[in-house]
Structure formats: C-alpha cells, structure tokens
Length: 79
Image (tube, rainbow, N blue to C red; front, top):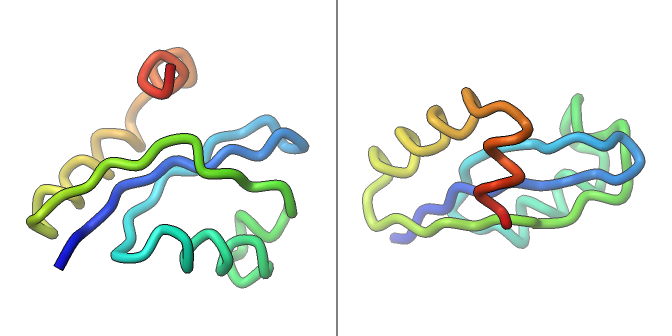
C-alpha cells in the first residue's frame, strides 16, 4: 500500500493544510465536501504538494515534521 503526505492551499483563507492519506484525490473531495471541521471553512482547496511513502510509519513521521514548519518553510518546500 502507498501512503501520502500532502499539503492543500486555500486562497480564500490564505492558509496551508497538511495531512496524510492513502488516497489524496478522495481526501481532497472529502475536504471540498465540507466533511472536515477546519477545511469546511473554504471550497477552494487545491493540492500543492504530495510526497509518497511505502511505509505508513515514515509518512506519519513526515506529516508530523510538515505540521511544525512555518509558512516560509512550507512555501520553500512547494517551490
């Protein structure tokens, strides 16, 4: 199974959202359908970064690292 760490961006909120999933596209639909408390605040989420992992443990480790990054570091990462 593949695991993904991803970053979404909402222009209307001007905010990045970091998370983990096994299916990034389904997860984006979930966020766009207002099924998550935080991301339901906007309807313009787009995927700006995806990283794939073979091991769930490694993906979760990377998700935790991304969540600690400041905005400048996130923007440098996504280029």
